[in-house]
Image 1 (tube, rainbow, N blue to C red):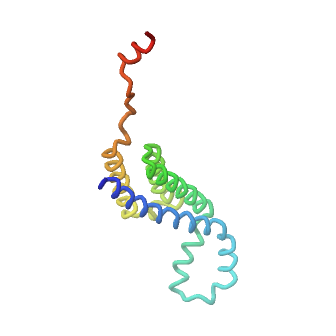
Image 2: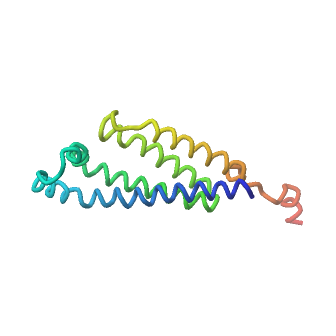
Image 3: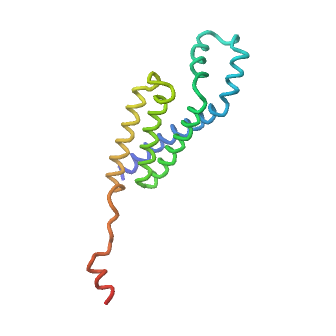
Length: 155
């Protein structure tokens, strides 16, 4: 019971992160052309500190945000399946985490991947694995009928 409660708490945290990230990545993918246009027209009205950050944001390619949104949706699916104690949920979640770690590396370069992202991803994958394993999610389905029962069934 304690393992299932811990699993549910972690899943709620993961879902909050994944839903918020999916919405923000979708928002950025959809509105990036408008941001570029607005920035080019009104860059003189922002303070210099803002512009240094903004210059880095507007240089991020639009497909990066679209791919991120899809991967966070895959994470949501994984969390929902893990909530239902399905091993496929763990695999969806783990795949999404690995691809989310690779996305900035492949799209933006190695300067955009954070050690904290790597640590939290590995930590959550490890904890999910341990909790799901302790709940018997990864154990093979055992057949309740024995060979003797099936042999006697025809008689």
